[in-house]
Length: 350
Image (cartoon, rainbow, N blue to C red):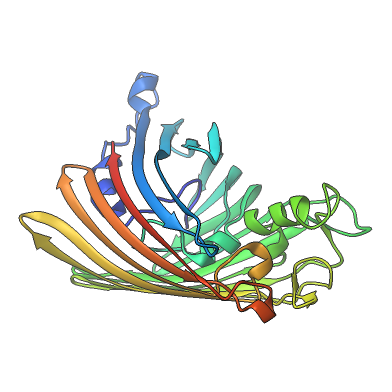
């Protein structure tokens, strides 16, 4: 289960190896400084792109600044805070803040975090289309745990979207279930997630509120359930990622496709390989992504990506990414044209 933030780059495995390795202090009478672990990441990017209309842009930006604090309050309670800044997108603010309460094999989580709907594993710099559509950050209550190889969680929250004419109550919920097995040189993570209202995802809730008619348009005639299945497999130096999102049909006039309610889906498939080049840990990956009936959300119909990441120093990665996106056809509400982007990122974890 992932809460709070997700490292997006292909370089995440290079950075995280040492970021969270500081020892957890158990003694309650130790100084508070010794019970707080801090980690973070800084990502600086040069990006050049050409959109569907042929307009070219380029920029240098501090793409991400994340600071993560974990405080071990006692042997049962942990407090977690994530501060996030994304230049031109997100002002420096609290991205996640939650408490974990250990109750034997189970953990109760309460606060603001990304609910476990979707795995969103990637070896690219850019978010996969599954994450762009489905990531859901909420103030929620969750009960979960790891029971051998079975990872499970259930959660509930009161989202921005409510059923028209219904009460403003915490009746959005979801279930996460995965089988996770790790060997010496292999890892298998296969799971399925369910949420009873994908209209509360960050992307769709923002669209309903700002693009579909105004600040009161974030109500839906009925909740729109969705499911995600994923398989993340690693065997030695080879890595395979597959994830598919399928949502039920929206009512007409909410999220539309060709004049009727959209039945949105998205798929991400990736293959990556680890190797050594000039003594540097290197990962090469390719991704094939697609969506169905998601043109209203500004999503591409198809997307092909290539990324190559070099561990140029300890906890430091240099990554290049190329992406080609194909828009929906004109008859489907798109342009039928292609867009391209090139990104070079320097990332440091601490």
